[in-house]
Image (cartoon, rainbow, N blue to C red; front, side, top):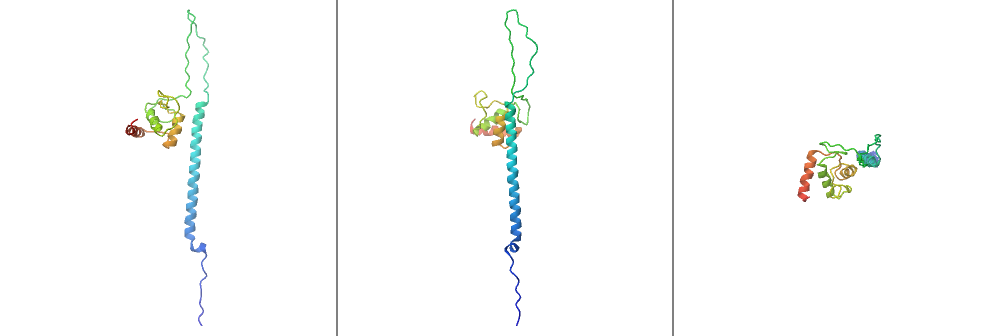
Length: 165
C-alpha cells in the first residue's frame, strides 16, 4: 500500500497575504490623506480668523501733540482719517491687503457664488476693490487660493462677460 501524503491546508492569511498587504497600505494612505486635508483646512481657517481679528483689533495711533492755532475768527478745523487696515496699492499678484481695480473683478466673480463680501462699495454689495478678510475668506472657499495672477483675473473677466455682469 502506498501512503498518501497530503499537504496541510493554507490558512486564510497565507492564501491572501498579498491582498491583505495591499489593502493595509491603501487604508494607511487614505488615513494619511484625510488627516492632511483636515489639518490643512484647520490651518487655513486659522489664517482667515487671524486676518479677521487683525481687522477688528484697534491700531495704536500716536496722538498729535501740537495744539492747533485758532484763527482770528475763532473757528478751527481738524481732519483725521485713520484706516483700519493699511492697504497697499500694488500690481500682481493680487493678494490679501491689496487695493487694486482688478480686485473688483475678483469680487464681482465671487458675487456670482452669492458670497458675503460686506456692505462696502458704491452699490453696498462688497465690491470695492479692496482685498480684505471677507474677500480672502470667500476666495479660499470658492476658488481655493489666496493669490491671483493677471491670467486668473482675465478668466474671471471673460466669465463675467459671458454671464452678463
